Every structure is written in structure tokens, then in C-alpha cells.
Length: 158
Ligand code: HEC
Image 1 (spheres, rainbow, N blue to C red):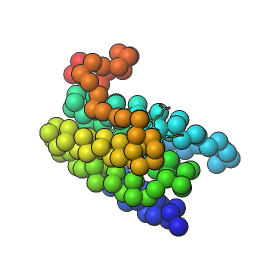
Image 2: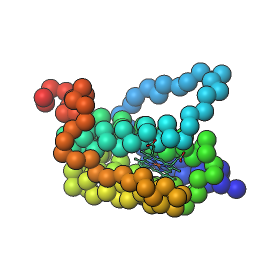
Image 3: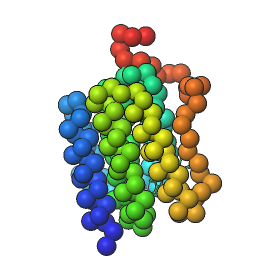
């Protein structure tokens, strides 16, 4: 069965993320909520989180990078939990780059951050290819920033 494997991966990732995280309260939905997001909605969120994670890391705003990494991990976990048909092996390959990004954030290592982001992005595309979605290709964001309504530099540095 696939679900327990997913849960194991998610547990490992969550533990890893928590250990590097600066204490931040998690906002929980109502326990009565029955809404299940469509997979594309979760993936659209993952796309934005991937983008913001990149800009935060590039700007050495490690608190924001940490925040986005946790949100991205949550999105991938959410996809796994709600859509157990997704092959497990495609998620396990995400584990290594996610942990590596977490390490890079902890020590503020920009080089390792960039390399790990490339590994993560390859993982996104590997899963898309394996699920007949090879036409959805994720890349490292270009230097041109998206809608300029969020400041990525750490507070006080802009
Ligand atoms: C375990 C498999 C898997 C992984 C890992 C994965 N995706 Fe996806 N993704 C999918 C599937 C399946 C779809 C297509 C969903 C559908 O057809 O309803 C998709 C669709 C998408 C889409 C298209 C959504 C749209 O409406 O345009 C984007 C963007 C996307 N993924 C981003 C990402 C990013 C960014 C990552 C990595 C951080 C990632 N995905 C990792 C399985 C995965």
C-alpha cells in the first residue's frame, strides 16, 4: 500500500524541517473542513513556493526561505496524502534535495542552496515525466522577478 510510505516520508521531512525551523505557529484549518484541493491547485501552490524559495535564498533571506521550504514540503505532502495514486518513488526522490536545501538554509550556504534547488527541480520534472505530464517543465526562476509586490531581502536590508 502506498499511503503509509508517503506518511513515513512526510514524517521524516517534517521532522527535518522542524529541527531547522525558527519557531513559527502553524495555522490549522477547521477540523470540520471537508475541502480537498485539486492536484493542479496544490501544484500551482508548489510552483509559487518553489519560485519564492528561490528568490528568498538568492536574497539570503534565510527566514523567508525556511518558511517557503516548509510550505513547499507541506504542498508535496498534501499532494501525496490526497492523491495516493502518485507513485511513491517520485516523492522519495524529492526527499534528498529538500533536506539538502534545509541544510543550506541552516548554515546560509548560497552555493549549496542553488545546487540543491537544481536537484529539487529535476525531481519535479522527473515526476511529471513519469506521470505523462512531461510537457510541464519547471526551471530555475530567471533573474527577472515576478510581480514586484513582495520584498525578498531580509527586513532592514532593502
Ligand atoms: C510525485 C509527483 C509530482 C511531483 C514530485 C511534482 N509534481 Fe507537479 N504535477 C504532478 C502531476 C501528476 C501534475 C498534473 C496534475 C493533473 O493532471 O491534474 C502536476 C502538475 C504541475 C503543474 C501544472 C499546474 C497547472 O495548472 O499549470 C505545475 C506548475 C507543477 N506540477 C509544479 C511542480 C513543482 C514546482 C514541483 C516541484 C517542487 C512539482 N510540481 C513536483 C506531479 C508531481
